[in-house]
Image 1 (tube, helix red, strand yellow):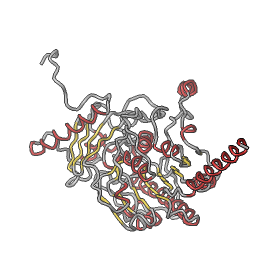
Image 2 (cartoon, one colour):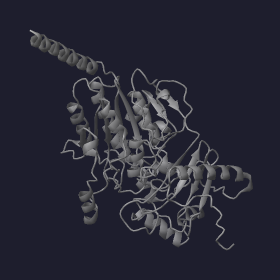
Image 3 (cartoon, one colour):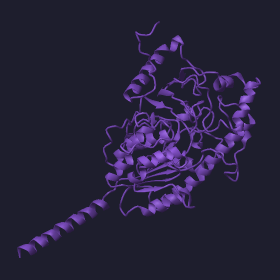
Image 4 (cartoon, helix red, strand yellow):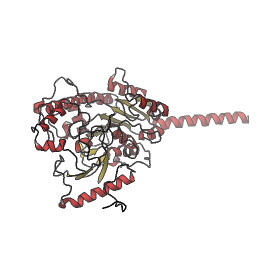
Length: 483
């Protein structure tokens, strides 16, 4: 009798536990979290950012339905380190991810792992997510090191990893992920698109942008090849816009928009002049739009200074999960809920190795650092001797044409100075309020000495605290050196 009673009690407790588990699962009303990334995409290259030349009706409508961030910056100007900052909430220096093809160390946690531990179904899909290194296209020596040391980690970190679309396209990959999510389980997905990464397509859309109708900024030379390149870049953004519209329609058809925070953003700046691979505005300033029906006020805007490192703590807070103690990011969850949020006073960013070639110029290698406040930016170029070359485009006819124009005296002096100076200044200081295109270097001018010294001190402190390996911007006196 006693045994039967124990068995009965065991059955009751087991059933209660099962019901409790089901109740908790059913009651898990935490938001789904979706990040949609374009590849190499700067502000202001979306219509809702004031660009009348580009056609992005779906992104513009999305902005009207949610929140536009006017000062979203990535803290690295290349795909791998920038995406590492998104996933970890830390700088690329702190995570040792400044090298373009580096894999994220297994011991460095990502915020989707924390979400997974708390009950989220997690995944990445679309274009390669970049954080397992480029072992697929690397040298045989690189591939061997990856294999010998088990450096591919994201299949262990997440529930769902899908970068081979099998002919279904990136939208189809999202559908496959949604179909795989267990019932009543919240989910996180990072969906990456190829557009507008180079090489740019000749016929990306049926009605291409007219090269002659595009307005060029002051820092870009006005040549036929430059205009045609910009038009193709705009075409690829427009192609993405069409896909983004389909993506949103699928979420609406599944009644997911009220339960899902959707963040669209560029992963880093565009591969255009003074863009990707540089610490100028077009390298770091990316479009960022958010929608969460019933929570985010439609048509809202914010000029709070926010970075890619702030995404991880924000998403974790919304999921009720404590951030990792290593995270440098600042949650902007309050902003999404319409509450007071001032944003950062400043942030720092880092540029490291890019690509797979030897360090002959800045297209492949640089060690620049910067600090940006709400008004000013200081750039530190410790490798000032390396000649400038634009990332992902130095082999294009466009760049060859500009070089010939410079060599034959047919390039205006401004562009010869910006792109073909024999050496770069070791420091650059810009007043972004008066000089948003960063054309006039204020370093050394007495009237700007105070802000120059202040920013050098901020960058100096950040580099020390991040254990940066680059020489510090404020030199320490060495009594053993002759003076």
